[in-house]
Amino acid sequence: RGEPAPAWRRDPAFLGLAAAYCGAAAGYVPHTIFFVDHVARDLGYGLGTGGGIWVAAGITAVCAPMVAGAAADRFGYARVLRVIVALMAVGATIPALSHNLVLLTLSAMMAGGLMIGLGASTAGRTREIVGAEAHTAAWALQTVAFAIIQAVAAYAFTALLAATGSHTLVFALAGAILAAGLSTPPAPARRPRGG
Image (cartoon, rainbow, N blue to C red; front, side):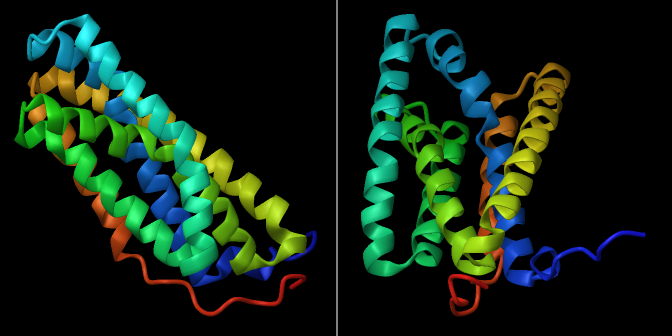
């Protein structure tokens, strides 16, 4: 019946990391499909302001992997990932709590812009958990799962918004999903790189 599944697929550290990453895939979706339109039209700030906010998110996305990498070198990927997820959770929730333009800009930077940093840090942490030889397969599995969850979440959030008309509910739920990723236990000590 074929070879048994590799041990890393059952590793609680890997499964916890994958769960948090997939949660982020769902939690940041409202910022990618609703946020700018919400700011520009629903809140009345206009398309220019909405676009400017998303430019700030783009700048954050460019810088995030470099900053996250430098932080991981000093503090480790596990700690950096928890900080990024926490910031994303706060950023995702802000539109449900405030219409202040400065806070909304920070929201875009945290919930949207930090995703690239999260991806790079998750890849690094995956390598630490499963080892160098299994990294490609483990990261490929997480990437596929991320894409599937993202697509499902886009459909689900769109349906929720259509049914309720409540951006507050959508953004609050997104923040809660991201925050749930913080409940996953930190991974154990590193394994040998070739394991």
